[in-house]
Amino acid sequence: MVPLLLTGRVERGEGIATSLGCPTANIAVEHGVIIPALGVYTGETIFEGQNFPSVVCVNDGRTGINLKLEVHLLDVCKDLTGKFLSVRLLEKARDLVPWEGDEQMRMLITQDLDKARAWFSKRAAVSS
Image (cartoon, rainbow, N blue to C red; front, top):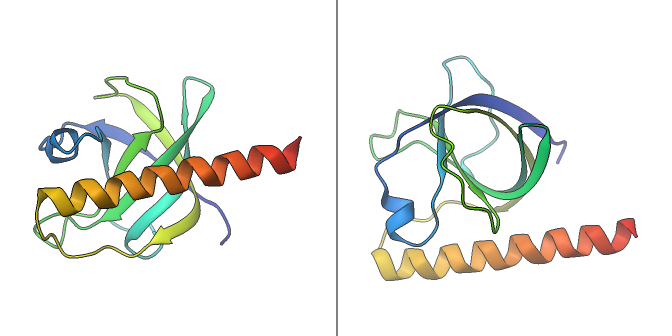
């Protein structure tokens, strides 16, 4: 996958991801912006000149029409509401799955975070 860079302002979300133990910065995708397929991606978030390993969910919300990025910075806790972020999608990790309850989502999110950490560890090892 060729990395894709998307930029936007963080909006306040519904808090669902936070209640599942994975707070996200929500960025609405502007009309006309080309995005890849919906799904979960390993990504990199650029904020205030720093790069943060991230997990990014590209989805269409509960309405099916509101495209957004839900960005979780790995092992970083910051309130980014109102800030501008640039998000680089590096590799698709998986497709979206239907919501079957909080416990299943917690399990999937934990797997996504673990896979992303392993991806970044392998990348760092190759770079050394």
